[in-house]
Image (tube, rainbow over all chains, first blue to last red; front, side, top):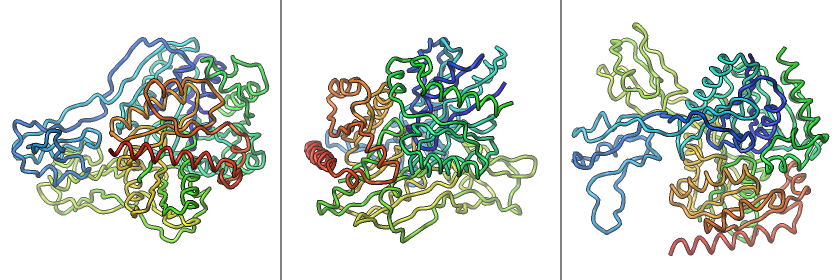
Length: 296
Length: 285
């Protein structure tokens, strides 16, 4: 059983569209949408949710107004500017401070120093995760709440659950749709995986961002392939990207040409390779074949 | 005006919009500062090509244990919500990447055996480009603490006529850090199901932050009407629509500013600025 993670560095390069096609091509697999901040894979996989669970990534502090003596120590010590006196709507002074849950990082310091024990410290539900069935096989996906941190924890949970399903059903692949960037959710998506595919685009931005994300996968010692999507928008930069990749031990797995069939397929809520038998689908199939080959 | 350009979905044109608005504003005689707050994958410098004058380290605090004073009592582990400091037999182990620098371990150590020391998580670079004051940040590879670098980028803000913030994609804590002090947010999207799905998340975020906002639709003719219909239903102004012009994509791929490569698009950005100005004024009444 192999875990393949698709990331990009730069956003909008086509990860989710390509993962959807891989889902249609791969035999015996489970999908994991780890772009928990802005999940989109479900829009083409059309999942039927079988289990819905709350995710609690941490705690938040909340001032108990009746107990609070307004000594302001919490305001002084909070390192995250999460506590202040809100301006009241009717012109009267608000007597006790307010902890803004958007900025509270759940460190618990204020809770522990409050001389009146007037701060509650509670597990919060900051997301949801789902185990679903699709026409392509099982899928684990999630929604992180607005402005929430701890995306790494939710990503790890999604991967763990996908692995359980793969073990239980004797599946061949876990295919992970990752998120853009190089931060916490991406790190949580790639560590311990068998192969990373970076989907990039033939632009200076794509080239720049690829460099950083490749350094990340190298840092974690994960075999990495790249694929240039919309490659014909700039063949020179495509060449440059593939040359640089080879020089740093990253193998090009193929090129996918620009084709608005990719958008049309998305609108039709299906994968590209099911939508069209055209050249763009052959491009994607070729990338998938190179992935399988690299995993052997 | 402090204007942030954000989005739910990646690759919708935030950097394109932010950099071109900055250039158009400067050419109109405004004092402009641009802060590239996408510290994981900054791209504004590719288009603005700034002369970098200052480079500074971004540091966060991490705990350091004074072994001679430590009694392995385990209170530091108890008070840490992030598993960044743990006691194993007589040794204290720290995991700096997990540390949120809250100060709890140091504060509650009964032996005063923990001090907080800085460690570098990224870099901030400042410079100028065509009269635009420019800052961007770079998070070190392998680090998690984007907000710390974003905050440092924002601390370089002056009081220009227009402060433009290029935000990272998404709706979670790095984006909040980037946009939270903005007076107006421009949400970039594309007219597709993914674009709509992520726009709705981003709209939820700016409404939660209570910041006035409007929408820019990039590649406005590639998809369908779902995004426009949504904006109409939600009474959200669409202040910019950029067509799916392959020439824009090609210019972008070469690191060229749209308004330089294709000057006919300058009017689009000027009209957008006028519209935002009007909305911003109305929001302030």
